[in-house]
Image 1: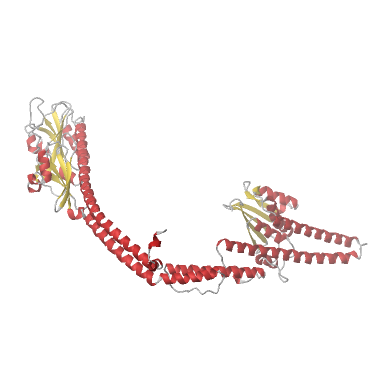
Image 2 (image 1 turned 180 degrees about the vertical axis):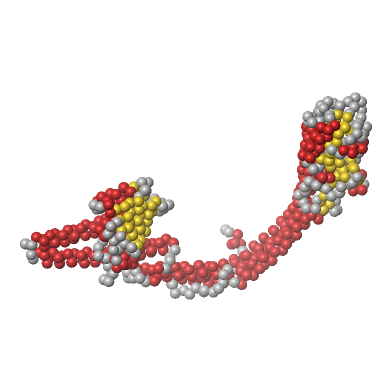
Length: 615
């Protein structure tokens, strides 16, 4: 037994009540699920945003690490520059200035200083022998305010070593320096970099993000993208901030990272990688922007629940008031049409909803059946000129009726043509035979009789050939059009001086060879017979097949001969004098081709034939 069988009969008999009950259950389930989802999604989105800010800090830290590594490589390479070794006042000075001009904008200065290979040095007393900042030449290194790390000083284990200073200030700007010995061991190349310029390249995934760099030992702000001043306490009191305490509790080069959520901001931090770097990148994002997605998700989910409940209520009301009654009425009308009652009146209102579409579909179905019925009645009467036969009936039934119409009309037209032409020509030719048969002793008249009988024989043969062509199914093969044209011209004994051909050697058509020969013979015979001085034949390959054009400069085919072909029907006032043009038209039709005539200046027959395989 189905679940519906347990429902009361009043509910089972009314679809609206069943829909209302199901809707209420769905609303309750979705409301419960939405409530749980709101809290889960909110927590998940908050965690994702925290991870996103931390990841942004990590990416910036890696970028800073790569920046320092790159600068170390630059300083190490420059320290081996041939223009600096051996040290020469003019040459070294020029080399430093040239290299500074080619380096990145954050490079503030390049200097060469003497060093004491033995003994500890703090990098203050060494004289500057050359510098891009010429005011420092000849003065001690201390004038640059470079703050070398106390644990390292200005000392090198070998000539390949590069040391990194602490971040220091000069006026309102912050700098960091790198140093590496020259190959002679007696001098050192010192490069200063302006960190505020590098800070301009900080990137953030969320608009409104502030980026700053803290010292890994002091938790002081070394430099950031918004302020040029450095060496300031983080948020005024580094020990009372979560990030500041994490830095102060850790060794300077310890890898620290994480995310912090405060009342006003979301913060992510990450250590800059590298043995000699003790910086920590911090990303600060206003909470209103970082967690805007969470608030929007909550608001949208609750709004969705409210809209859904209103939608179910509205849907139940609309179904109860309208569609159910309309569907019941349409069901009665559909049953009447199924029983053959085409007098059913379908309501043709301007309703455009689903019920209106069903009404329109029933109305179209009724019109469809009525059109088919009227077309069948017209065909049974052989009333091929009735307008109802021009109506488009889609689908297999329409295709069958159209095929029946075409085949029946074509069959009757063929019979009319063959009957009228044969009767007309046979009667005329027999009259000639009778008139000349009375005087058989006259040789000329005897020849006339023989010519007439020969004409009758040819006409009968052509009629039989047409019947054969129209009765057979095309057998497509690859046909060389140039060879076929030449063969037909040879058969009709055409004068070569009269005929010009433009047929490419590769003009190949996949079609029925016998029917193609028939199609070519009729217009070629006509052109050779009636041309005054020339016949032109051209063949052109097309994407679909080929185009054949046969032209002559004769008097042109009379319009009266072409009109029956256009209307596909002969009458007592409009009929052709032979079967040649009908043979041409029916042959082209048999090959699914297209035929046209131009008679302004002589006669031009244009035949377009497709590859049968392609169609």
